[in-house]
Image 1 (cartoon, one colour):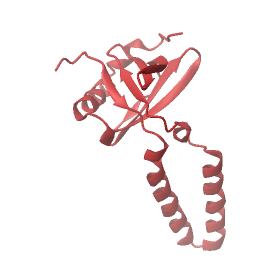
Image 2 (cartoon, helix red, strand yellow):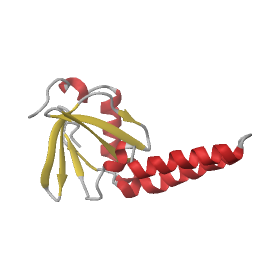
Image 3 (cartoon, helix red, strand yellow):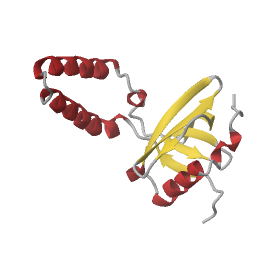
Image 4 (cartoon, helix red, strand yellow):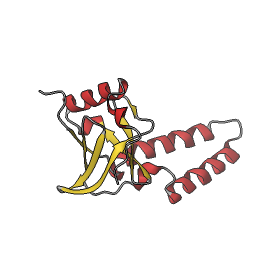
Length: 149
């Protein structure tokens, strides 16, 4: 398998975040109830969690439910596609974050910064492993400062 071929990944949508977000919300509520001041903490946590869910504070929740595919090239350029049609083109820029469960990639287009989340369970294992190595070794960030219009 050539090491310099483009990698194709499935971008995580809202449904991928629903269960983990609910689980974290329940755990936060349980810890508030177990605190020394359970009533006031439970009310405060409920208000904050409700506001967070209502306003969609997390940038991840802005991802649409459309099946998006990202193609990452060895030079750091990124294409986001939906059903074969190119939606967004840009380059990786800024801070990238990855572990064995998921990766958060930042990329820039003309004047805008975007983030996308890749869940490892939805990806080809070899491509995901290669992405982790590229990010840890900064192979993809050689293109920083070059933004496509």
